[in-house]
Image (cartoon, rainbow over all chains, first blue to last red; front, side, top):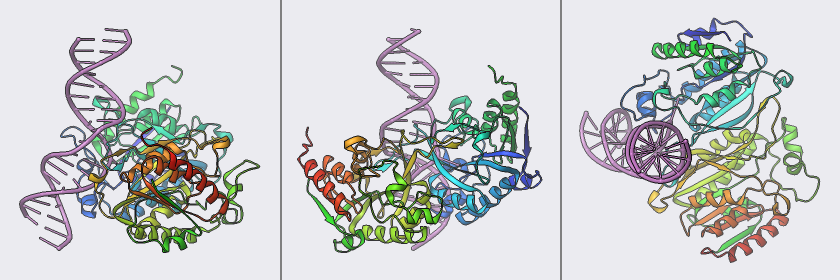
Length: 242
Length: 242
DNA sequence: CAAGTATATGAATCCCGCT
DNA sequence: GAGCGGGATTCATATACTT
Protein backbone atom coordinates (compact mmCIF):
# COMPACT_ATOMS: atom_id res chain seq x y z
CA UNK A 1 0.00 0.00 0.00
CA UNK A 2 1.19 3.56 -0.66
CA UNK A 3 2.38 5.87 2.07
CA UNK A 4 3.56 9.45 2.54
CA UNK A 5 5.73 10.71 5.35
CA UNK A 6 5.85 14.49 5.76
CA UNK A 7 8.63 16.12 7.72
CA UNK A 8 7.75 19.14 9.84
CA UNK A 9 5.40 20.53 12.45
CA UNK A 10 2.10 18.66 12.58
CA UNK A 11 -0.18 21.71 12.49
CA UNK A 12 1.60 23.29 9.54
CA UNK A 13 1.69 20.12 7.51
CA UNK A 14 -1.93 19.22 8.18
CA UNK A 15 -3.02 22.69 7.05
CA UNK A 16 -1.76 21.93 3.54
CA UNK A 17 -3.54 18.59 3.16
CA UNK A 18 -6.95 18.42 1.40
CA UNK A 19 -10.39 17.91 3.00
CA UNK A 20 -11.73 14.38 3.30
CA UNK A 21 -8.50 12.78 2.18
CA UNK A 22 -8.19 10.21 4.95
CA UNK A 23 -10.47 7.59 6.52
CA UNK A 24 -9.11 7.34 10.04
CA UNK A 25 -6.93 9.19 12.49
CA UNK A 26 -4.80 6.88 14.63
CA UNK A 27 -2.23 8.68 16.71
CA UNK A 28 -0.17 8.78 19.87
CA UNK A 29 0.56 12.44 20.63
CA UNK A 30 3.00 13.71 23.26
CA UNK A 31 1.23 13.45 26.63
CA UNK A 32 2.77 16.47 28.31
CA UNK A 33 2.46 14.78 31.65
CA UNK A 34 5.00 13.22 33.99
CA UNK A 35 5.93 15.06 37.17
CA UNK A 36 3.79 16.63 39.85
CA UNK A 37 4.64 20.28 39.44
CA UNK A 38 4.19 22.43 36.41
CA UNK A 39 7.94 22.94 36.33
CA UNK A 40 8.69 19.24 36.37
CA UNK A 41 6.34 18.76 33.46
CA UNK A 42 7.42 21.71 31.38
CA UNK A 43 11.17 21.97 31.94
CA UNK A 44 12.31 18.37 31.85
CA UNK A 45 12.88 16.54 28.62
CA UNK A 46 10.58 13.74 27.56
CA UNK A 47 13.44 11.32 27.97
CA UNK A 48 14.17 12.30 31.55
CA UNK A 49 10.48 12.14 32.40
CA UNK A 50 9.65 8.82 30.84
CA UNK A 51 12.79 6.70 30.78
CA UNK A 52 15.69 5.71 32.94
CA UNK A 53 17.96 4.53 30.20
CA UNK A 54 21.24 6.29 30.06
CA UNK A 55 21.83 6.03 26.37
CA UNK A 56 20.38 5.45 23.01
CA UNK A 57 17.06 6.83 21.89
CA UNK A 58 16.60 10.43 20.75
CA UNK A 59 14.38 12.78 22.72
CA UNK A 60 11.17 14.19 21.23
CA UNK A 61 9.75 17.70 21.18
CA UNK A 62 6.33 19.10 21.99
CA UNK A 63 6.21 17.72 25.52
CA UNK A 64 6.61 20.99 27.42
CA UNK A 65 3.18 22.60 27.46
CA UNK A 66 1.12 23.35 30.52
CA UNK A 67 -2.28 21.76 30.71
CA UNK A 68 -4.21 24.68 29.28
CA UNK A 69 -1.98 25.05 26.26
CA UNK A 70 -1.90 21.34 25.78
CA UNK A 71 -5.68 21.25 25.54
CA UNK A 72 -5.65 24.08 23.04
CA UNK A 73 -2.92 22.47 20.96
CA UNK A 74 -4.69 19.10 20.87
CA UNK A 75 -7.89 20.91 19.91
CA UNK A 76 -6.19 22.44 16.88
CA UNK A 77 -4.55 19.19 15.83
CA UNK A 78 -7.81 17.31 16.20
CA UNK A 79 -9.74 20.01 14.36
CA UNK A 80 -7.37 19.88 11.38
CA UNK A 81 -7.48 16.09 11.44
CA UNK A 82 -11.27 16.26 11.49
CA UNK A 83 -11.25 18.39 8.38
CA UNK A 84 -8.96 15.90 6.64
CA UNK A 85 -11.22 12.96 7.50
CA UNK A 86 -14.14 11.93 5.30
CA UNK A 87 -17.68 11.77 6.70
CA UNK A 88 -18.15 8.63 8.76
CA UNK A 89 -14.42 8.33 9.36
CA UNK A 90 -13.02 7.40 12.76
CA UNK A 91 -10.38 8.55 15.23
CA UNK A 92 -8.32 6.82 17.90
CA UNK A 93 -6.04 8.88 20.15
CA UNK A 94 -3.73 7.50 22.84
CA UNK A 95 -3.49 9.37 26.13
CA UNK A 96 -2.45 8.74 29.73
CA UNK A 97 -4.67 9.09 32.79
CA UNK A 98 -3.55 12.61 33.70
CA UNK A 99 -4.54 14.17 30.39
CA UNK A 100 -7.57 12.01 29.68
CA UNK A 101 -10.20 14.61 30.68
CA UNK A 102 -8.35 17.33 28.75
CA UNK A 103 -8.21 15.06 25.72
CA UNK A 104 -11.92 14.21 25.73
CA UNK A 105 -12.67 17.94 25.90
CA UNK A 106 -10.39 18.78 22.97
CA UNK A 107 -11.67 15.78 21.03
CA UNK A 108 -15.27 16.92 21.25
CA UNK A 109 -14.53 20.61 20.78
CA UNK A 110 -12.81 19.71 17.52
CA UNK A 111 -16.07 18.27 16.22
CA UNK A 112 -15.55 14.55 16.71
CA UNK A 113 -18.36 12.48 18.17
CA UNK A 114 -16.80 10.85 21.19
CA UNK A 115 -17.85 7.19 21.30
CA UNK A 116 -15.80 5.58 24.00
CA UNK A 117 -12.60 4.87 25.88
CA UNK A 118 -10.67 1.66 25.42
CA UNK A 119 -7.67 0.60 27.49
CA UNK A 120 -4.17 -0.50 26.57
CA UNK A 121 -2.71 -2.62 29.36
CA UNK A 122 1.07 -2.85 29.75
CA UNK A 123 1.80 -6.00 31.75
CA UNK A 124 5.41 -5.01 32.37
CA UNK A 125 4.66 -1.64 33.91
CA UNK A 126 6.16 -0.69 37.23
CA UNK A 127 4.35 -1.69 40.41
CA UNK A 128 4.09 0.74 43.28
CA UNK A 129 3.78 0.14 47.00
CA UNK A 130 0.43 0.96 48.54
CA UNK A 131 -1.02 1.98 45.18
CA UNK A 132 -2.78 0.78 42.08
CA UNK A 133 -0.32 0.26 39.25
CA UNK A 134 -0.48 2.74 36.36
CA UNK A 135 -0.55 -0.14 33.95
CA UNK A 136 -3.08 1.27 31.50
CA UNK A 137 -2.96 3.97 28.90
CA UNK A 138 -6.20 4.95 27.26
CA UNK A 139 -7.68 5.20 23.79
CA UNK A 140 -10.18 7.97 23.21
CA UNK A 141 -12.10 7.07 20.10
CA UNK A 142 -14.97 8.38 18.03
CA UNK A 143 -16.15 9.31 14.58
CA UNK A 144 -16.99 12.11 12.20
CA UNK A 145 -20.77 11.80 12.25
CA UNK A 146 -22.49 8.43 12.16
CA UNK A 147 -20.38 5.32 11.69
CA UNK A 148 -21.11 3.41 8.52
CA UNK A 149 -20.71 -0.12 9.84
CA UNK A 150 -21.32 -1.60 6.40
CA UNK A 151 -17.97 -0.23 5.28
CA UNK A 152 -16.19 -2.03 8.06
CA UNK A 153 -18.03 -4.99 9.56
CA UNK A 154 -15.36 -5.66 12.16
CA UNK A 155 -15.74 -6.19 15.89
CA UNK A 156 -12.85 -4.67 17.80
CA UNK A 157 -11.97 -5.36 21.44
CA UNK A 158 -12.16 -2.76 24.20
CA UNK A 159 -8.94 -3.89 25.84
CA UNK A 160 -5.53 -4.28 24.24
CA UNK A 161 -2.62 -5.99 25.95
CA UNK A 162 1.00 -5.63 24.92
CA UNK A 163 4.41 -4.52 26.08
CA UNK A 164 6.72 -1.98 24.55
CA UNK A 165 9.32 -3.49 22.24
CA UNK A 166 12.70 -3.99 23.91
CA UNK A 167 16.27 -4.29 22.81
CA UNK A 168 17.02 -3.56 19.17
CA UNK A 169 13.32 -3.51 18.26
CA UNK A 170 12.94 -0.41 20.43
CA UNK A 171 13.18 2.66 18.23
CA UNK A 172 11.29 5.28 20.22
CA UNK A 173 11.00 6.29 23.87
CA UNK A 174 7.27 5.72 23.92
CA UNK A 175 6.88 3.17 21.16
CA UNK A 176 3.65 1.19 20.90
CA UNK A 177 3.55 -2.58 20.30
CA UNK A 178 3.05 -3.43 16.65
CA UNK A 179 0.43 -6.10 17.41
CA UNK A 180 -1.74 -3.57 19.22
CA UNK A 181 -1.43 -1.04 16.40
CA UNK A 182 -2.26 -3.67 13.78
CA UNK A 183 -5.53 -4.35 15.54
CA UNK A 184 -6.33 -0.68 15.96
CA UNK A 185 -5.74 0.40 12.37
CA UNK A 186 -8.41 -2.05 11.26
CA UNK A 187 -10.98 0.43 12.54
CA UNK A 188 -10.10 2.06 9.22
CA UNK A 189 -11.93 0.24 6.37
CA UNK A 190 -9.77 -2.00 4.13
CA UNK A 191 -7.73 -0.02 1.58
CA UNK A 192 -8.60 3.20 3.39
CA UNK A 193 -6.04 5.77 4.49
CA UNK A 194 -4.75 6.14 8.05
CA UNK A 195 -3.45 9.50 9.28
CA UNK A 196 -0.89 9.92 12.08
CA UNK A 197 0.28 13.50 12.77
CA UNK A 198 2.77 12.24 15.37
CA UNK A 199 4.37 9.40 13.50
CA UNK A 200 7.43 8.98 15.75
CA UNK A 201 9.23 5.82 14.73
CA UNK A 202 6.36 4.99 12.40
CA UNK A 203 4.67 2.05 14.12
CA UNK A 204 1.18 3.24 13.15
CA UNK A 205 2.24 3.42 9.51
CA UNK A 206 3.91 0.04 9.53
CA UNK A 207 0.76 -1.45 11.07
CA UNK A 208 -1.44 0.27 8.49
CA UNK A 209 0.62 -1.00 5.54
CA UNK A 210 0.70 -4.52 6.94
CA UNK A 211 -3.08 -4.46 7.28
CA UNK A 212 -3.62 -3.23 3.75
CA UNK A 213 -4.32 0.42 4.56
CA UNK A 214 -2.56 3.45 3.08
CA UNK A 215 -0.75 5.82 5.40
CA UNK A 216 -0.13 9.53 5.72
CA UNK A 217 2.25 10.49 8.51
CA UNK A 218 3.90 13.60 9.89
CA UNK A 219 7.03 13.71 12.03
CA UNK A 220 8.92 16.80 13.19
CA UNK A 221 12.07 15.24 14.59
CA UNK A 222 14.56 14.39 11.84
CA UNK A 223 16.04 11.38 13.58
CA UNK A 224 12.63 9.81 14.06
CA UNK A 225 11.49 10.71 10.56
CA UNK A 226 14.54 8.83 9.23
CA UNK A 227 13.73 5.80 11.33
CA UNK A 228 10.07 5.91 10.30
CA UNK A 229 11.01 6.28 6.65
CA UNK A 230 13.19 3.19 6.81
CA UNK A 231 10.58 1.13 8.63
CA UNK A 232 7.83 2.19 6.20
CA UNK A 233 9.96 1.32 3.20
CA UNK A 234 10.46 -2.13 4.64
CA UNK A 235 6.79 -2.59 5.53
CA UNK A 236 5.80 -1.68 1.99
CA UNK A 237 7.46 -4.91 0.84
CA UNK A 238 5.46 -6.94 3.30
CA UNK A 239 3.25 -9.33 1.41
CA UNK A 240 -0.29 -9.22 2.70
CA UNK A 241 -0.97 -12.72 1.45
CA UNK A 242 2.02 -14.13 3.32
CA UNK B 1 -15.16 -7.74 61.38
CA UNK B 2 -17.90 -5.31 62.43
CA UNK B 3 -20.15 -3.56 59.97
CA UNK B 4 -22.91 -0.97 59.90
CA UNK B 5 -25.51 -0.55 57.19
CA UNK B 6 -27.42 2.72 57.22
CA UNK B 7 -30.71 3.05 55.38
CA UNK B 8 -31.45 6.35 53.72
CA UNK B 9 -30.17 8.99 51.35
CA UNK B 10 -26.37 8.95 51.08
CA UNK B 11 -25.84 12.69 51.59
CA UNK B 12 -28.07 12.86 54.64
CA UNK B 13 -26.57 9.81 56.29
CA UNK B 14 -22.96 10.85 55.62
CA UNK B 15 -23.64 14.25 57.17
CA UNK B 16 -24.26 12.57 60.53
CA UNK B 17 -21.08 10.48 60.58
CA UNK B 18 -17.95 11.74 62.39
CA UNK B 19 -14.74 13.13 60.84
CA UNK B 20 -11.88 10.74 60.17
CA UNK B 21 -13.91 7.67 61.00
CA UNK B 22 -13.03 5.62 57.91
CA UNK B 23 -9.83 4.61 56.13
CA UNK B 24 -11.01 4.17 52.59
CA UNK B 25 -13.90 5.01 50.30
CA UNK B 26 -14.73 2.24 47.83
CA UNK B 27 -17.91 2.82 45.92
CA UNK B 28 -19.84 2.31 42.73
CA UNK B 29 -22.25 5.23 42.38
CA UNK B 30 -25.10 5.47 39.85
CA UNK B 31 -23.51 6.48 36.54
CA UNK B 32 -26.31 8.63 35.15
CA UNK B 33 -25.29 7.63 31.68
CA UNK B 34 -26.73 5.16 29.19
CA UNK B 35 -28.70 6.66 26.34
CA UNK B 36 -27.49 9.13 23.78
CA UNK B 37 -29.73 12.06 24.54
CA UNK B 38 -30.31 13.94 27.72
CA UNK B 39 -33.93 12.84 27.60
CA UNK B 40 -33.01 9.18 27.26
CA UNK B 41 -30.68 9.46 30.21
CA UNK B 42 -33.03 11.31 32.50
CA UNK B 43 -36.40 9.74 31.78
CA UNK B 44 -35.64 6.03 31.50
CA UNK B 45 -35.21 3.89 34.58
CA UNK B 46 -31.85 2.44 35.52
CA UNK B 47 -33.16 -1.02 34.78
CA UNK B 48 -34.19 -0.24 31.24
CA UNK B 49 -30.85 1.47 30.60
CA UNK B 50 -28.49 -1.11 31.98
CA UNK B 51 -30.17 -4.48 31.59
CA UNK B 52 -32.00 -6.43 28.96
CA UNK B 53 -33.53 -8.89 31.38
CA UNK B 54 -37.28 -8.85 31.62
CA UNK B 55 -37.74 -9.82 35.21
CA UNK B 56 -36.37 -9.97 38.66
CA UNK B 57 -34.10 -7.29 39.99
CA UNK B 58 -35.39 -4.12 41.63
CA UNK B 59 -34.69 -0.75 40.02
CA UNK B 60 -32.54 1.87 41.76
CA UNK B 61 -32.94 5.62 42.20
CA UNK B 62 -30.57 8.52 41.73
CA UNK B 63 -29.93 7.80 38.07
CA UNK B 64 -31.87 10.66 36.50
CA UNK B 65 -29.63 13.70 36.74
CA UNK B 66 -28.25 15.66 33.83
CA UNK B 67 -24.49 15.89 33.55
CA UNK B 68 -24.13 19.18 35.36
CA UNK B 69 -26.24 18.13 38.32
CA UNK B 70 -24.55 14.76 38.39
CA UNK B 71 -21.16 16.45 38.74
CA UNK B 72 -22.47 18.63 41.53
CA UNK B 73 -24.06 15.70 43.32
CA UNK B 74 -20.92 13.56 43.11
CA UNK B 75 -18.92 16.53 44.35
CA UNK B 76 -21.05 16.73 47.47
CA UNK B 77 -20.92 12.98 48.09
CA UNK B 78 -17.15 12.94 47.61
CA UNK B 79 -16.70 15.99 49.81
CA UNK B 80 -18.61 14.40 52.68
CA UNK B 81 -16.70 11.15 52.18
CA UNK B 82 -13.46 13.13 52.25
CA UNK B 83 -14.40 14.61 55.60
CA UNK B 84 -15.14 11.14 56.96
CA UNK B 85 -11.78 9.77 55.83
CA UNK B 86 -8.65 10.02 57.94
CA UNK B 87 -5.51 11.76 56.64
CA UNK B 88 -3.65 9.48 54.24
CA UNK B 89 -6.80 7.50 53.49
CA UNK B 90 -7.70 6.41 49.98
CA UNK B 91 -10.64 6.43 47.59
CA UNK B 92 -11.72 4.27 44.67
CA UNK B 93 -14.77 5.23 42.63
CA UNK B 94 -16.20 3.23 39.72
CA UNK B 95 -17.40 5.14 36.68
CA UNK B 96 -18.12 4.52 33.01
CA UNK B 97 -16.42 6.27 30.11
CA UNK B 98 -19.12 8.91 29.58
CA UNK B 99 -18.93 10.35 33.07
CA UNK B 100 -15.20 9.84 33.61
CA UNK B 101 -14.18 13.47 33.00
CA UNK B 102 -17.03 14.73 35.18
CA UNK B 103 -15.99 12.32 37.90
CA UNK B 104 -12.33 13.34 37.91
CA UNK B 105 -13.47 16.96 38.22
CA UNK B 106 -15.79 16.25 41.15
CA UNK B 107 -13.17 14.03 42.75
CA UNK B 108 -10.57 16.76 42.77
CA UNK B 109 -12.98 19.56 43.64
CA UNK B 110 -13.95 17.58 46.73
CA UNK B 111 -10.35 17.74 47.92
CA UNK B 112 -9.05 14.32 46.97
CA UNK B 113 -5.63 14.04 45.37
CA UNK B 114 -6.31 12.22 42.13
CA UNK B 115 -3.63 9.56 41.62
CA UNK B 116 -4.73 7.48 38.71
CA UNK B 117 -7.25 5.54 36.66
CA UNK B 118 -7.40 1.78 36.67
CA UNK B 119 -9.60 -0.32 34.41
CA UNK B 120 -12.16 -3.04 35.08
CA UNK B 121 -12.53 -5.27 32.04
CA UNK B 122 -15.75 -7.23 31.51
CA UNK B 123 -14.96 -10.07 29.10
CA UNK B 124 -18.63 -10.87 28.54
CA UNK B 125 -19.61 -7.43 27.29
CA UNK B 126 -21.42 -7.03 24.00
CA UNK B 127 -19.32 -6.53 20.85
CA UNK B 128 -20.40 -3.90 18.32
CA UNK B 129 -19.93 -3.93 14.59
CA UNK B 130 -17.45 -1.40 13.25
CA UNK B 131 -16.60 -0.21 16.75
CA UNK B 132 -14.39 -0.78 19.75
CA UNK B 133 -16.21 -2.74 22.42
CA UNK B 134 -17.21 -0.86 25.58
CA UNK B 135 -15.73 -3.60 27.69
CA UNK B 136 -14.10 -1.45 30.34
CA UNK B 137 -15.40 0.54 33.24
CA UNK B 138 -12.95 2.73 35.09
CA UNK B 139 -11.69 3.25 38.62
CA UNK B 140 -10.79 6.78 39.60
CA UNK B 141 -8.58 6.55 42.64
CA UNK B 142 -6.62 8.84 44.92
CA UNK B 143 -5.90 9.80 48.49
CA UNK B 144 -6.45 12.38 51.21
CA UNK B 145 -2.99 13.93 51.24
CA UNK B 146 0.15 11.81 50.95
CA UNK B 147 -0.20 8.03 50.98
CA UNK B 148 1.47 6.34 53.91
CA UNK B 149 2.75 3.24 52.13
CA UNK B 150 4.18 1.83 55.36
CA UNK B 151 0.63 1.28 56.62
CA UNK B 152 -0.18 -0.83 53.62
CA UNK B 153 2.83 -2.34 51.83
CA UNK B 154 0.73 -3.85 49.07
CA UNK B 155 1.18 -3.79 45.30
CA UNK B 156 -2.16 -3.60 43.53
CA UNK B 157 -2.74 -4.18 39.82
CA UNK B 158 -3.94 -1.50 37.40
CA UNK B 159 -6.29 -3.83 35.56
CA UNK B 160 -9.06 -5.98 37.00
CA UNK B 161 -10.83 -8.64 35.00
CA UNK B 162 -14.13 -10.20 35.96
CA UNK B 163 -17.67 -10.69 34.76
CA UNK B 164 -20.82 -9.67 36.53
CA UNK B 165 -22.34 -12.48 38.59
CA UNK B 166 -25.07 -14.39 36.78
CA UNK B 167 -28.10 -16.42 37.73
CA UNK B 168 -29.00 -16.56 41.41
CA UNK B 169 -25.74 -14.89 42.43
CA UNK B 170 -26.94 -11.77 40.65
CA UNK B 171 -28.57 -9.53 43.24
CA UNK B 172 -28.20 -6.09 41.68
CA UNK B 173 -28.52 -4.57 38.22
CA UNK B 174 -24.96 -3.26 38.19
CA UNK B 175 -23.34 -5.70 40.60
CA UNK B 176 -19.54 -5.96 40.68
CA UNK B 177 -17.65 -9.27 40.84
CA UNK B 178 -16.72 -10.24 44.39
CA UNK B 179 -13.17 -11.21 43.42
CA UNK B 180 -12.52 -7.76 41.97
CA UNK B 181 -13.94 -6.04 45.04
CA UNK B 182 -11.88 -8.25 47.36
CA UNK B 183 -8.73 -7.08 45.64
CA UNK B 184 -9.77 -3.45 45.68
CA UNK B 185 -10.72 -3.21 49.35
CA UNK B 186 -7.16 -4.20 50.25
CA UNK B 187 -6.14 -0.65 49.33
CA UNK B 188 -7.59 -0.02 52.79
CA UNK B 189 -5.03 -1.09 55.44
CA UNK B 190 -5.76 -4.34 57.35
CA UNK B 191 -8.42 -3.88 60.04
CA UNK B 192 -9.27 -0.45 58.67
CA UNK B 193 -12.78 0.68 57.80
CA UNK B 194 -14.21 0.80 54.27
CA UNK B 195 -17.01 3.24 53.41
CA UNK B 196 -19.54 2.71 50.62
CA UNK B 197 -22.29 5.37 50.34
CA UNK B 198 -23.97 3.39 47.53
CA UNK B 199 -23.93 -0.08 49.01
CA UNK B 200 -26.50 -1.62 46.64
CA UNK B 201 -26.54 -5.35 47.21
CA UNK B 202 -23.55 -4.99 49.52
CA UNK B 203 -20.72 -6.54 47.51
CA UNK B 204 -18.17 -3.96 48.71
CA UNK B 205 -19.10 -4.72 52.31
CA UNK B 206 -18.95 -8.47 51.83
CA UNK B 207 -15.50 -8.08 50.22
CA UNK B 208 -14.32 -5.83 53.06
CA UNK B 209 -15.44 -8.26 55.77
CA UNK B 210 -13.87 -11.21 53.94
CA UNK B 211 -10.58 -9.31 53.75
CA UNK B 212 -10.59 -8.38 57.42
CA UNK B 213 -11.74 -4.79 57.05
CA UNK B 214 -14.68 -3.18 58.82
CA UNK B 215 -17.48 -1.72 56.75
CA UNK B 216 -19.82 1.26 56.83
CA UNK B 217 -22.44 1.29 54.10
CA UNK B 218 -25.43 3.37 53.07
CA UNK B 219 -28.31 2.24 50.88
CA UNK B 220 -31.46 4.18 50.08
CA UNK B 221 -33.56 1.49 48.42
CA UNK B 222 -35.24 -0.77 50.98
CA UNK B 223 -35.16 -3.89 48.80
CA UNK B 224 -31.42 -3.59 48.26
CA UNK B 225 -30.74 -2.69 51.89
CA UNK B 226 -32.48 -5.93 52.87
CA UNK B 227 -30.39 -7.94 50.44
CA UNK B 228 -27.19 -6.23 51.60
CA UNK B 229 -28.08 -6.79 55.24
CA UNK B 230 -28.51 -10.51 54.63
CA UNK B 231 -25.29 -10.83 52.67
CA UNK B 232 -23.30 -8.88 55.26
CA UNK B 233 -24.66 -11.00 58.08
CA UNK B 234 -23.50 -14.08 56.23
CA UNK B 235 -20.08 -12.62 55.40
CA UNK B 236 -19.55 -11.75 59.06
CA UNK B 237 -19.43 -15.49 59.76
CA UNK B 238 -16.78 -16.03 57.15
CA UNK B 239 -13.65 -17.31 58.80
CA UNK B 240 -10.64 -15.32 57.65
CA UNK B 241 -8.29 -18.16 58.51
CA UNK B 242 -10.24 -20.60 56.36
C1' DC C 1 14.94 -28.82 23.15
C1' DA C 2 12.27 -27.93 27.26
C1' DA C 3 12.52 -26.04 31.66
C1' DG C 4 14.59 -23.38 35.09
C1' DT C 5 17.56 -19.31 36.35
C1' DA C 6 19.54 -14.77 35.94
C1' DT C 7 19.21 -10.05 34.46
C1' DA C 8 17.37 -5.78 32.81
C1' DT C 9 13.66 -2.37 32.69
C1' DG C 10 9.33 0.42 33.01
C1' DA C 11 5.10 7.56 29.41
C1' DA C 12 6.35 6.16 37.93
C1' DT C 13 6.76 8.47 42.32
C1' DC C 14 8.90 10.36 46.16
C1' DC C 15 12.47 12.09 49.14
C1' DC C 16 16.16 14.97 49.80
C1' DG C 17 19.35 18.50 49.27
C1' DC C 18 21.05 22.32 46.63
C1' DT C 19 20.10 26.78 44.33
C1' DG D 1 10.39 29.13 50.74
C1' DA D 2 9.67 27.53 46.27
C1' DG D 3 11.92 25.59 42.27
C1' DC D 4 14.69 22.17 40.50
C1' DG D 5 17.29 17.89 39.70
C1' DG D 6 19.49 13.55 41.24
C1' DG D 7 18.86 9.15 42.81
C1' DA D 8 16.55 5.24 45.41
C1' DT D 9 12.75 2.42 45.43
C1' DT D 10 10.24 -1.85 43.63
C1' DC D 11 8.42 -6.25 41.38
C1' DA D 12 6.03 -8.32 37.30
C1' DT D 13 7.41 -9.26 32.92
C1' DA D 14 10.32 -10.19 28.96
C1' DT D 15 14.43 -11.85 27.37
C1' DA D 16 18.78 -14.05 27.44
C1' DC D 17 21.19 -17.65 29.10
C1' DT D 18 22.17 -22.11 31.44
C1' DT D 19 21.23 -26.75 32.72
